[in-house]
Length: 65
Image (cartoon, rainbow, N blue to C red; front, side):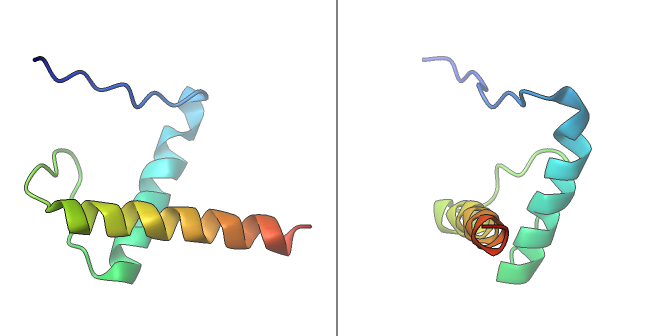
């Protein structure tokens, strides 16, 4: 089974902003995220970063209602 990355950003110009957002979320939950490959993270750590990103996006959306 080959691993293929399907995480494509629809707006390529947004990549830098998304990377910055991901790093901020990781810092907030105490995960040591580095630029590039982060395959040494546990599933729990990676999930906590993604969960924090979603939480912040929902908060932002609700604030702008």
